[in-house]
Amino acid sequence: MPHYPTLREQFISRFGGDESGIRIFEAPGRVNLIGEHTDYNGGAVFPAALTFGTTLLIRPRADRQLSLASTNFPADTRLVSLDGLTFTGDDDWTNYPKSVVWELGQRGIELPHGYDMLFHGEIPNGAGLSSSASIEVVTAYALLTLEGRNTDTVEIARWSQHAENEFVGVKCGIMDQFAVANGRKDHAILLDCDTLKHELVPFESGDCKLVIGNTNKRRGLVDSAYNERRAQCEAAVSDLRAAFPELTLLGQLTLGQYDEFEHLIADDTVKNRARHVVEEIDRVGRSVEVLRQGDLAAFGRLMNASHDSLRDLYEVTGAELDAMVAAAREVPGVLGSRMTGAGFGGCTISLVHQDAVERFIAEVGDKYKAATGLTADFYVCDIGDGVHEAKEEI
Ligand code: GLA
Image (cartoon, rainbow, N blue to C red; front, side, top):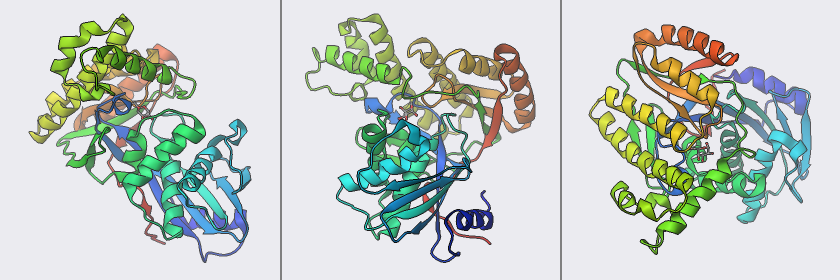
């Protein structure tokens, strides 16, 4: 939980003025419980918002500049004109708030003046817990609120995803922005990424805790094989159109339909990618069912199956994630463990009996270090709320 008075002081020391007029907004990070690489295939995902994320302190300026600062990079305040916003590699994280202002412009919402903005991020960068979506969504929500516009959080998710796709150039799906915008304390979100129909499902983990393990192997989404995976899924759709002429996304097929026509996919690698997607979507449905019955052991087995499929069929895990998951599964009291997010590094999520959490952190940390030379971090995960204006407790 950030300390607002300290953040206010930092805001004033960067931008001058006094406390009046500063508003504070927050957006969480997210963790995906199951349903990986299904969102851009129009399938189901099952993410949850975290209790930590990005805090934004914001105040209007008289001119047409955005002044962007972050407590995470104390030496650096960027001044950006509202007119002619473009993506620049050197602008680093500031491309995310810029992308949102650009997106609002695309939607006919021109800001009449600039803003001073101080960001405070508690999500480790590059960990796959959606620090960028969190910055985008908090920026969009704050600006729309201050401009007296509609702050529909489903729209905010769509716009933020579009900003990342078109301005930043990362062809991500909608899951991250959606979870960050629409999360609810103690609930996971069952989201159909084709229709955006969604349902908040109470996440009751009984005697168990969700534990996030950060491999501290940075995950490069833009440069990674992410876009290649997307293209392979499109190739599968194109082959399957021989049987389903109207097909546009793999998520429109049931597992049974896929089984029957998989032979139409020419390339074996593409076949593996497609099989992961349709089976993973099926696992999301089964996960929600077993969780409703309180069968955590069955959910744990589905988490394991998800990881194994991401490792063997979708091939997005890598040595670090595999080492951490293997170590996790050896600890008594672990019901399931999988990578979460895009893969190629980033984090794992494990369902661990509460009495085993301490031992889990110690043993997985040691074994992971021995296997990879890297030091892991662990966070026992509570599920928090989506984007909102902060209620100050001074
Ligand atoms: C990243 C993307 C999401 C999703 C996941 C994989 O987090 O931003 O849209 O595709 O990878 O499930």
